[in-house]
Image (cartoon, rainbow, N blue to C red; front, side):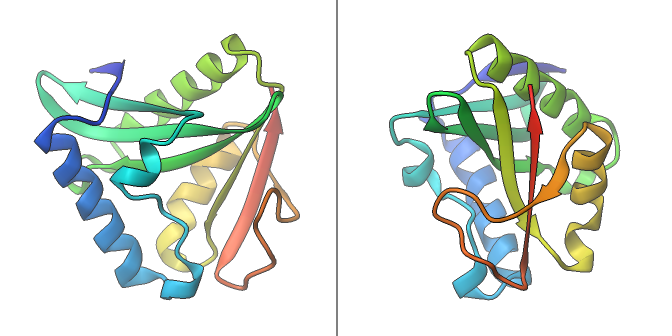
Length: 151
């Protein structure tokens, strides 16, 4: 497996992200869905990575710059057939290292509060994220939890 910066131009990543957005819409009320679509991930200040096994996309993730020292983790997804196989851990380790290299001092994220998101919350806890208040433009939402860690 390798983690690569992705320019979001290929049809494979477009399909992978479309499946992510569909899944988030299926498990989260629309007013609480914060997953970025392809256009949202193409904005300035976003760095996007794909995890490839050979030429197959098995995961993805991004950061978006909030301030000079603070970034948000976005678009974390593992291919359903590869869940719990180390893809997300490898990617999150890479995101944390690259964020520190880029000069960020803090990483934060929003994820769901429901049972569907429990594996994600456990992953983030394993990597040193702790629960926090809403940050940036987020507001309190019973469907969301917020986590942060220093780098």
